[in-house]
Length: 140
Image (cartoon, rainbow, N blue to C red):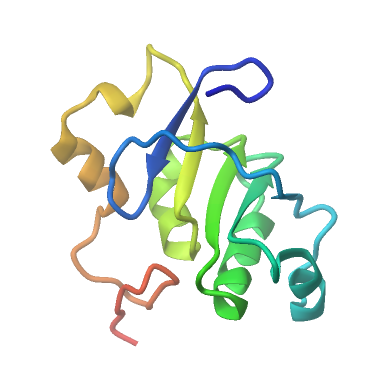
């Protein structure tokens, strides 16, 4: 699979499995779509899966957008694309993303590690302080 002729590795954040799936044609850009319910509804109500693009890894608007979409339409599969890396898998999953598409870097890839290591990246904590969009319970 390619995104602008770059090799992509796709990870199901819920199962921890490497999967083969296409990047959805509907891509939301947090620079253009706000997190108001009315703005999101116009963009996603008829979609089964969408992608949210990260222009930079540290931009929290994509996480907020994913969480809000899960509140409005829980059945939509949300893909993360753009400037993401393995270090944010946990946060992607907790905010409602289902699939992550990573640019392949063979020298630093987590995807060549043992399955237990990958599971610990996706679920580094046994308990959570707050509940998340991944249906995990929290203390509060």
